[in-house]
Image 1 (cartoon, helix red, strand yellow):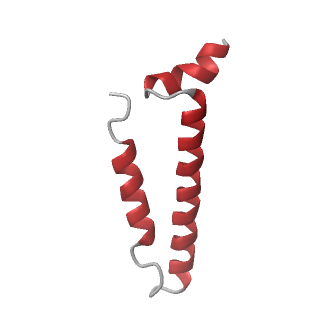
Image 2 (cartoon, helix red, strand yellow; image 1 turned 60 degrees about the vertical axis):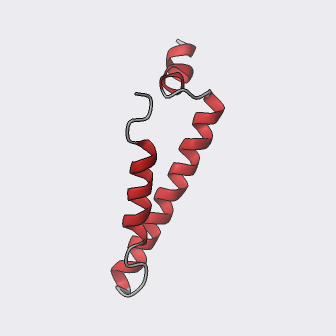
Length: 68
């Protein structure tokens, strides 16, 4: 049970539990930053014109085909 819950997925992407945790926390932080930029952009369109989409694109490039 422990193996399946905490270790199976990180191993599937060739990471330890702690490496995966660090990656996921950084990913979450960048998503929060993208969301904040998009929120500001909604009210002041001249600010952060491409920030959210650039962050999302970079995250996709880093995660696409992971573990394959």
